[in-house]
Amino acid sequence: MATHYFGTMIITVQGLELLIVDLKTLKPIERVHKELPVGDDLYQHQPIHFDLVNQMTSALRGFLQILNDYQISDYQLWGSEALSRALNADFISDQVFLRTGIKLNWLSISEETYYRNQAVLVDLQEAKNSPESDLIYLIGINSGNTTITQFNQLSFVYSSHYSLGPVRIAEDLQSLRQSAPNSVEVLRDYIDSKLADYSQLQPQEAVSGPSEIILLGSMPLSHLTLENEHRNTLSASEFDTLFDRVVDASDQFLMDQYNVKEAEIPLLLPELLLLRKLMRLTSAKALHFSHNTVLDGLATNASVKAGYSKYDFSIQTVTAAETMANHYKVEPIHQRLVTKFALHLFDQLKPIHQLSNRDRLLLQVAAILHDVGAYVDTHEHYLHSDYIIQHTSIIGLSVHERQLIAAITRYHSTTTPSEDLSHFRKLDTAERLLVAKLAAILRLADALDDDRQQKIQRISVSTKPHELVITVFSNDNLSFENWEFSFKSQFFKETFGLNPRLKQRSVTSK
Image (cartoon, rainbow, N blue to C red):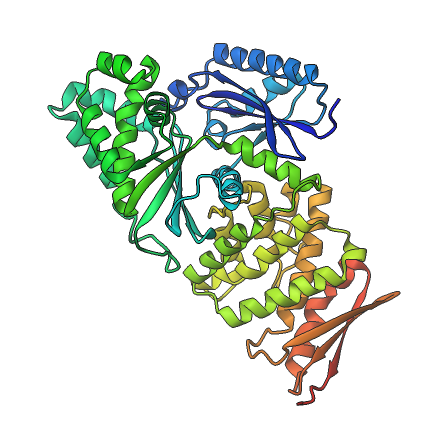
């Protein structure tokens, strides 16, 4: 048995997929796909039919047998964000567990985007099919959603999401074909209306100019191109030529000339129209196809956790949080100083709190975003911060992680969990402790610059049996900081059992 083999599975609205990978090399050992038309029920706002659930669990048992044949005991099962929106998603999750013994973990849109990006970036960093342009868009298209992520010189810039995909569009097209004289024109207007605010909603950090697109998850188009022309890349002009050939073609012509599967024919035109619009919006001069899926990114993440790989993609999450903070006009100097202090405290207190690097990332995002609520109202801004964070996608974070971050920011200022149990009732014991520890650290960090005057530029931390000594380097009068620190440190004492003490040391000019 190869102990470094890992299995990861996903259920989407298009079917099920299994990937077995060698975590040491990230080389795929086996990939199995089972098509299942779950989206037909989902996008008609109907519960997933019981027969389809039976087929799901039957396919999963087959996957488990394959894993058993490889003697793999390390595996995970995930469900796509679109499937989690099914009316009977809880029933599906329960039936999967009862019939297979596997827990179904739901992914958010931002997590799906994050993991797909990971897989592509690994290839790009290893110079596999690297585009010529510095400006790259990773565009993920699945049945009902489209995500657009911009990278400049392989550095993350921003990510956006639209509830727009070929299956969702195809349903509208079906009725339009019967009622509109020119369904293509009407469908084009429909897509244009959904993307009308694309340019206005771009963050100020967005980069403009000629670009290239790497397309992920596009089933009909990638099959049509790769299987018949054996091409991984199309120039913008080649795409336009292909579009003109396909847009008015009969179903039989598409099947005969391009080997398009009959089931995928209704999806091809919506996808082409959507992609042509995106190519124009992004000034794309070339289109590349990638077979990387969410599973490839999940495998990369598992390899990192196991210590076989040293990739670190958390910078995407940090950058997304900073972009969000800029959008809500968070004062940058205070934000950076509080984040710096919070992370320093976290690192120095690691033997005491024993939290993970992932928890450190949650604290970092909370520190970056703790004041976003002031955009709504400075009075009780922490309540508005809570709401904004819970209702905004941040790439790489699950919905539950956003809830934890929202709770941390809620308790960074005046109230504490002991005074406001609105979040704590929803969390288990371990999560309550996590939120309490990170909120206590953030409260101390925020107290050191509560008046936004940056009197303290540097701190050092030392611990004694019952005391935490924070030495601050400053030549200013810190009477206000001492008063604020005394108030905010009480919760830290309750959480960690250490009494925080502020010690000032003057700064000598060199």
